[in-house]
Amino acid sequence: MDRGEGGGGGGGRLFQRRRPCRFCLDKGSIDFKDAGLLRNFLTERGRIVPRRISGNCLGHQRELTVAIKRARHIALISFAEER
Image (tube, rainbow, N blue to C red):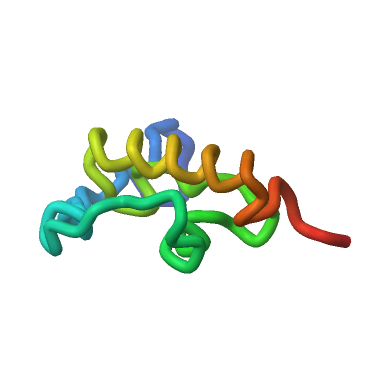
């Protein structure tokens, strides 16, 4: 079969090695009062970056999410971007 002819197929995705969790490597703790650290895991629009993009392990991603929500609740970081 030629490359130009149909044939469907889902353009094979290459396997990429998962990067290690930065909290597991550094043995650092996640604190809701550390707004600078938490902002690294937010998009420009204020959404929490997913685990597959941030590279965090499941446990630390859950801790991070709770810390971001606590920081938002006491107004250390904003809920959304300012227009």
